[in-house]
Amino acid sequence: MPDRLALRLRRRVRTPRQKLVASLVTAAVVLGLGGYGISRLTTPEDRSCAAGVARPVGSSECVGVNGDGHAFGMADLGEVAGAIGRENATLKAGEYATVAVLLPLTSTDSGMREKVLHEVQGAYAYQYRANHESNSETPKIRLVLANTGKGNAHWRETVDRLVAMTGAPDRLRAVSGVATSSTEVRESVAALTAAGIAVVGTTITADDIANGPGAGHNRYPGLARVSPTNTDEAKALSHFGRVDATKAFLVQDTRTGDHYTDTLKAAFTANLKGAPHEPGLFTSPADPTEEGTTANTFRQITHLICDTRAETVFFAGRHTQLRQFINALGSRGCTDRAFTVLTGDEGSYLGADKKLDRKALKAKLTVRYASLAHPDAWKPAPGRRIPATGGSVVAYSTFLTDVARAAKGPVALADGQAIIAYDAMATAVHAIRQATPDGAVYPAKEDVGTQWPQVKGSLRVEGASGWICLDNYGNPYNKAVPIVELTQDGTQRFVQTAWPEGHPPTQTCLPPKKG
Image 1: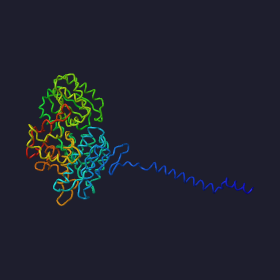
Image 2 (image 1 turned 90 degrees about the vertical axis):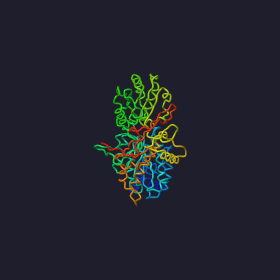
Image 3 (image 1 turned 90 degrees about the horizontal axis):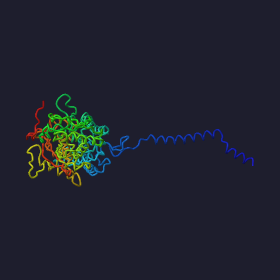
């Protein structure tokens, strides 16, 4: 019995050595568990979306560059992104150069999403032509989609990725898209061209995102554009309308830093030197796609317009505010008087804008805008004369054949975005192939942007939107400007083609000397 008692006591009372061993074991377990916890806390979260694409910290958007069919979470881009991925998969390493389409692919604004879809469809349509319908010219073209995020907020990450793609295997040789005249886009263009990458703007129209004569003229070496500048749009509108400045009124946005609006109001002001009244002013939100409170301001401005003798109203602002202004004019006090609103290419968004009050267009109100392209501009029709120069029926018919491959159903063309993106891609491919030396597969990166001064005369690009004849600074010379009217049912009716010079270019299409 004493022996059993002693045994139980020995089991309860541990020796110093046993205590030490137990402590070491416990510490090891604790440290192990703690290390596991720390490991879990410090292991970076997987924020990838696809190859070359990830969600930036603090954002749910998939940002980056991809050509494998990834649609960046946007269902409406799924079909065309898949088609691009399948086309790219047919290309062999070392036989292609890459062109990127840089756009805010994940924009939540409905108008911008329509624009993005149509631009990507137009770009793919020309990629297919370049690879299958161009007499086996080389290099072949790989197309990738580059997303800068809503409002181009993540442009830096995407541009850095593009700059890193100039070597093998991608051999990025040009960037197209860059479609909005904003500060973020200007910074993107500056960074890309500083890295020696050629850029072809689609719908950027701001005069200050461009090169030109004078000091600091080559701020963006390697930049070309296929759309007229705001100044050229304003000139074309003035030639078309022959507006009496004494019966005109200007409504303009006071928010600065938006290069589209800033240069458009400057161009309108220059063309309305005889206007008797101060402009009507409004201030759009920092994000001009938001509604803000500007509708209240427009209600007041319509009263002031009724107090004038104005017949024509020039509007310098973005499409959301343009729609608000038209809605306000529709319920103005002086509905017995007729008004015509003239504006820039942002008017192309109105046809798809469900918030536009269609009844406003029946209140003796005509809305016309300078479009970048329109499907009827180069299409024969009874009573419509097609200009002998500046564009061609054949070039537009070729585009129709190509764009039919870009989607299973018809591609919307009325806003001109698919047409202008197709032409931008055609211009990029033209420069890449012209810059490729005999016997080489692809050109040096820096040589592509040096081709722009030669894109004129017989070396012009026969664009679907009209001839693309570039001056020595990469800007289109006397480019066709379709004047489009928003009809009462909201459709966009082609009126006629106007020209910055007041007439079509000559057959040679050689820009005159400046300065």
